[in-house]
Image 1 (cartoon, rainbow, N blue to C red):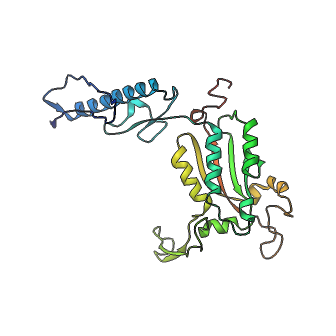
Image 2 (image 1 turned 45 degrees about the vertical axis):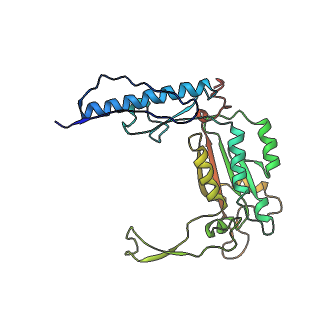
Image 3 (image 1 turned 120 degrees about the horizontal axis):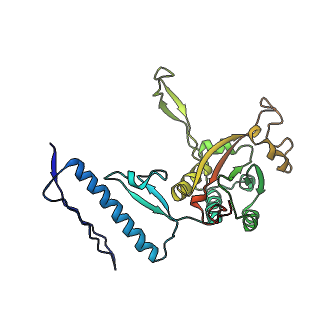
Amino acid sequence: MLTASMKVSVKETGKGAPLYSINSDLAGEVTLEALFKHLKETLIIIADQTLREAQVNGFTKKPILVVDNSASKPLEQVSPVGKIQFIAQVQSSKLLLDAYDAIESRTRVVSGTYKKYNWVAFNGSIVATSKPSFEAWLKVNSNFKYQDRIRFINFAPYAARLERLGVRLGKVSPRKKTQKKDRLGANGGAKFSSTLANGAYTLAAREIRRKYKYNSGIYFQFKFGDAIGAFSAALPGRAGGTHYQGGALKGKPYLYPTILISLKDIGLTDSDVNKGIL
């Protein structure tokens, strides 16, 4: 039988740090199974005590529970050497405006045309064509429902190309294609040229996902014009809207960089679900 001896201690630094007392009947040598069971119970007890203290000091009463980096894993299934996190909910307008700012702060301005086409759609309809118009829309549209979809889109015809070339604020010239080996063997293991998207929208999506990944679903996506063709009527001065009007690609849809945010009721302080309306 595999046995091990153990000692559990908890230390939290800082002024007014709490003292934890973990009682256990374990003594001397224990089985590995008992060790893991004790570690799991200790982890849950400490997490509960920490949450209660934080709530006394003003932390949210409805936190998002994240167990071992999963928002869907039950607390009792935490790994003995895992992690328990309590994530604060966020106001929907803050999340969405932070996303818009993340895009704008990375958008390189040359002629101004690219930046002026950072638009926003709500459940398939254009609702804003600038930050001021988006802020105005949010003031009267704040009670979002579960899985409402906000999509940030750049409608410049060349937006997808700039995204693939990694053109963004602070980067003067497009990056070169890199040689990579085909690991799947589709090309006999030969090297091929590839450029992964690394522009304003890609980097903005990474930033807001790091900050709000447990509050809402956040996805970078390329979308063809025929998939969002209903928006073409909202493109002033652009005959044909989302499709090429001449050349070899006439009639073909443009490709656009987008960021999709699928709102989660559990992650928002002001959703209809949290207010008990739905």
